[in-house]
Length: 278
Image (cartoon, rainbow, N blue to C red; front, side, top):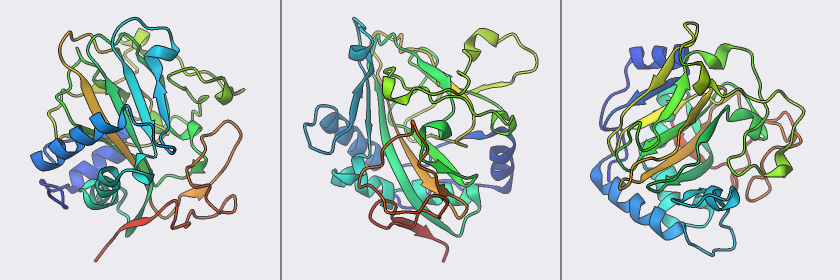
């Protein structure tokens, strides 16, 4: 399994990421990683581990076909996911795009949409859901299966991380604990003809990844394929300007970090240092 990205990240890639707030990087993970993590995903989807944090979106919303499964902070209790977060190319990819000298793990998240899953992922930003603030925080979303528009490819709005918007957190299973007085994010899927918006989306092979800024607006439709699942892991990393910000209606971090509000999140139990520039 490769520890370093299989392909170089160029200065042009860094510039595109900064301008658009999202970029697709091709062929960064070898087949050994893909096989290992597909097996790990299948195992954790039905785990009863005490630290597992599953969200069964299809069941919660009363869906009648497919399965939209999310699990979070899996690295805290599963050895394969811990290795993925700390030993895969993810951290170096994050460091390269943030131009960071060191990177800490924030958390990991599994996303699976089985065939004929109707539930969409509403348009949203990530940061309103997190007890964190800062520019140097990003997500490395790795496709473990081929991804197309039919089976729920992600869509992004280019440059939306620089709009100055901070929408209410969008929770796929509509958890009432995250209610907010912030503005609700519109369904930008209804504005595809708007000439002022530039939509980004990519067909992906297993081992490709999308990296996005936490304020970049994104969402996806359901998985309408009768045969192909969509499985991915999104791993979130932090650089030097990340700050702990436990606002109301944000998620709980497994391990309950000991960090003062406004401080750099250097609790090694919860946010381990995973990459440093040599």
